Amino acid sequence: MHEFSIVQSLLGLIEENAKKNNARSVSKVVVKIGRLSGIEPHLLKIAFDTFKEKTICENAELEMIIQDIVAKCEDCKNEFIIEDNRFVCPECQSFNLKIIDGEDMYLMSLELDI
Image 1 (cartoon, one colour):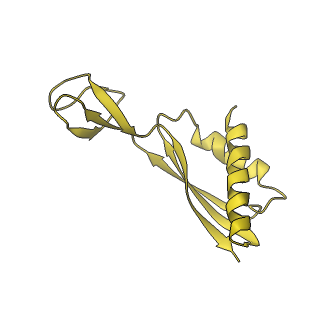
Image 2: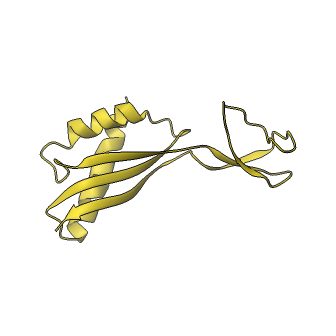
C-alpha cells in the first residue's frame, strides 16, 4: 500500500510549511487527488489518520478533492472530462489526446493554528 509512503512525504511537507509559518498545529489539510493518480482515497485517509498521531497534524482534518480526468484533443483542441474510461474525443472521435489534469496529487491548502 503506497499510500503510507505518500502520507509520510505529505506530513513532511506539511511540517516544513508549518515551521516556516511558526504554526503550533495544523487543523485542516486539503489535497486534490486525480482519478489517474493511482491513489485510493479511502486508503489515503486510513494512512493519514494512522501517521498523524504525535505530529503537528494530530488534530487535523483531511479534506480530499477528487479531480476528474481532463483531456484535450490534439486534433480539434476540444477540452473535456473523460467519463467511463472513454479516452476518445466526444467532438471528433480522435484518440489523439493529451491529459491536462487528473494524474497527480497536490497539497492545496493548510489551516494553521499560530
